[in-house]
Image 1 (cartoon, rainbow, N blue to C red):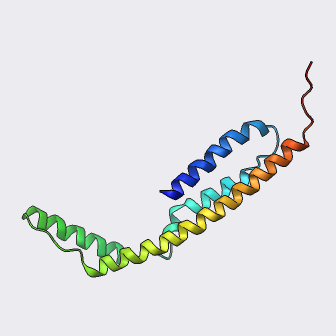
Image 2: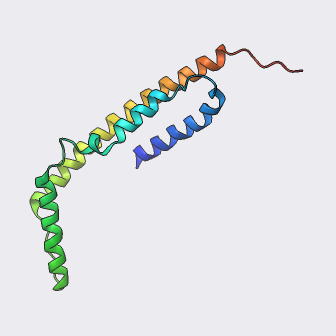
Image 3: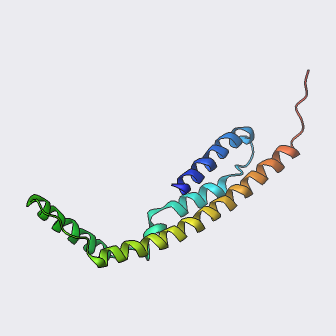
Length: 126
């Protein structure tokens, strides 16, 4: 949820800053590129989730469905609990790193936008 809030804040910052600099180079192009790469499912899942994990999950779901049809419950297998906890820790750390990288790119874009705004001549009033 926090990552979603950071992304929303970043997008809001871009939405407010970009129109003022529409005629020049987009100071948030790097941010856009990083955002796309870091939020891709491959970045989150590659090397973390295996076919064995998917099999483990769906074996449990099938057993649960059959048990539910009989009015019973199936306990969650210890292996599934263990994998879920491991994945949770890994994804939490990945989310932290992703957030920091996105903030770095956003800061860089914001600084560039400020530099460009300060280097432009002030509008003359009639």
